[in-house]
Image (tube, rainbow, N blue to C red):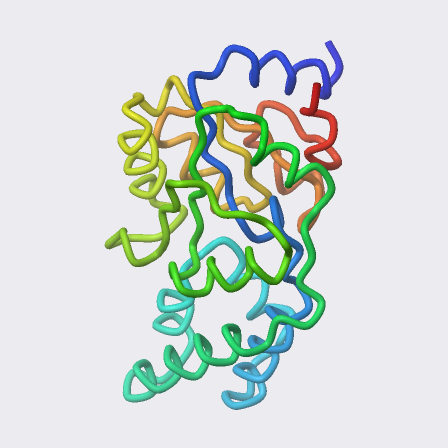
Length: 209
């Protein structure tokens, strides 16, 4: 069975979908890169390494890992404002709109705030589904499984009945620990970094009928 065939099989067997936002539904790499590069410059850090750590995690957790303790609150605010006011280059990824309009039982599960998720969806021309689980809803971000556990409950399902669509190693780990099946999208990471997923696909178009 090819990765595409496996991904389609997992989709058809899933009771619901838990879908990451950045790198899965939306390409926000340009504004994300600008915000975290500015953060790295302020603290004398390597921008590429900062971005690697930040991908898939709530901003507040990356800030607490990398910024001096006394700067946490200021940096969290600066990053949120930078990302909310800079949407240049934010685009819907191929197949995203069709999947959101498919009528399937689904929720977005993202590491960004609810405010930022809404801004990015609008910038990409995508209508948000009724259920969006954001960093505002969790106490621990990916790779902790809490977000997917909450997402599954919001769909009145067990995590094991859900298929997660993710692009980051942190998200894949979170989904697997929660007990969900995972298909990875090859958008932001090398395939070797996505080895925890059951199938790796190029984009969401292969899941369309």
